[in-house]
Image (tube, rainbow, N blue to C red; front, side, top):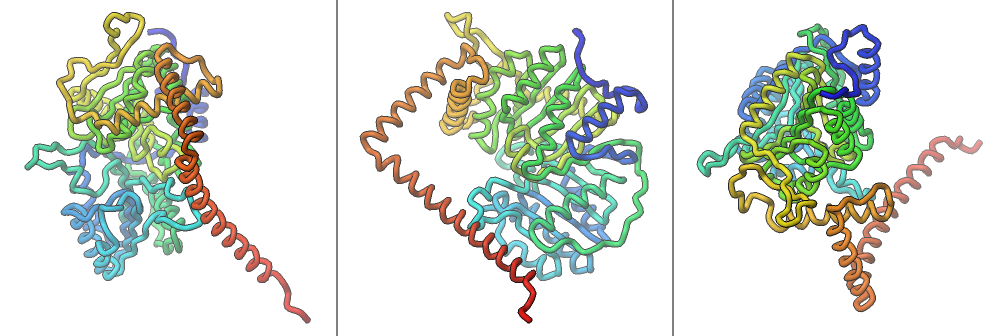
Length: 490
């Protein structure tokens, strides 16, 4: 194997290289390395739900639950009823759910029994006038903390969907999470407290819990917030530091150019870079966008696999069998820059090897995507599935293909406009398609200006309304501040 630049995860804890790596990782993630933890790997929803419910039912002081989707179905009601039981016994119960995540999944009435029992429920970021782009930021975390003693984070939402549908032959979703004991639990509780206080009054003061070492695992709890990009910096850094292997699992991969470049550079340096993504997705449009980015990955030597089951929803990474990441963050802009996410980055060989073994097991149920020469055009390549059975109806349909095409055209046109990189031989098609689309738009604007003008007018009115409300609120707040500081006349 050729020489690979990067840090050695297995270096001595006192070596300069290890100290430099720890400093770089801590600064990138915005999270310190916490020793003295125990971590247990949780695979798939059935194990998650059983473990989570057992922890909730055993709560003595407090239950803090934060999840993107809590659905009004058999699983959702089981969790709600367990929370109701604890609240009736005087346990503090606080729940945060995302407004968009639960849209169409559960209504406010679903939480009425918990509120009646003394529990508190808050909705993250419902629509508000004065915030025209507010809907972009979501609470995508899957977090549970009980009594300040045990914490869980995962990709699993609270929904029957994760268990599949045996009657219809639908297998359970493939997902990954962890259970934590030790100092890391306090970081999980702090992350929940920040989400809670961002919506309303802060949590009450809880009796202090003596934090004792529970194991020998060192890890970081990375609780990202909009625009902080801590997880993005961490992912970039790990791609640069990996020396032998970097195995990624992602549910909604939409690679941005800087991250794709980081992966490609690692692969060209001899790192075994692999990406496992869903073969069929619950969001076909995202699946189409993901597939539109396969070619540059494959050309760089990155191996891409598609899961053959019902849905792959895990978000994991493992590097050199020494470092591992599990959590809620996907490899896309929404997770990196817009959402509240929570992940754990683990620097422990035993846990990393356990996750690597699970990765190899997952690949046994996946199909590798390869580049094959186009017929009669040996200088051109196309993406194809290696030994894949027919999957008609599982590729996302016309909406998925349209999204993939739009993304390819947007990326190519953006590169042509900014001249930020040399266009490849596979990008002439998107460039010509973009040219044709712009010519059609120009013709429509000339012949039927109202067709273009009305949508622009509606958008302008919408933003004017929201910005006006925002400005009015800011002015009132400023006037109240001035009134409060003025002294009364003598």
